Length: 188
Image (cartoon, rainbow, N blue to C red; front, side, top):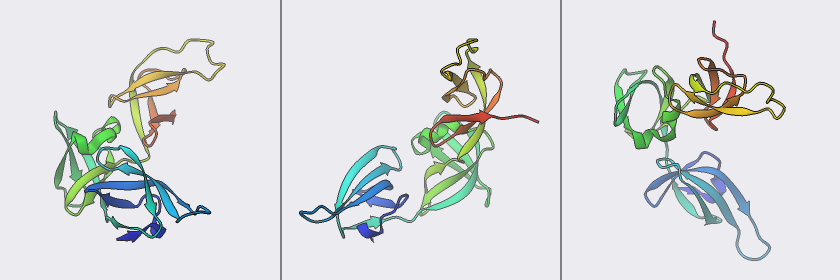
């Protein structure tokens, strides 16, 4: 159990049988009435964000999670298959558990699998991944005053906004936290 005074960003809590991570929190001490803690929680499995208020000093069950390095191998119609890089065991995760991380998974990508006990409950991607553009419109010449962007489809199926000078076949670095273009990757 953890008290509201011990809340910090990234702490994982169990509320009503679901696992949530604290995205942000704020201790509030109004002039009238008791102090409380306002939090924004993200459901680990669904990604849904929830605003919740706790009374100061209230106890909540915290959960210890473990991360293990793994390598993405391949996907089937219903599952994503990873290999534990320490034991070489294969771990299959459903589309629901992988969630939005699937947009940036390509073969042989090194990731972290998040476990609660023996059960895998999620995938943590590296902050940046290099992906090839498979489809994008050509840039319109002279339309760069506003720093224009255009949509580009990546090899994994994700669509990101890229600058007009980026062409099909190029490899770009993508920030997996926000799904945004970072820079063009120079290949050797």
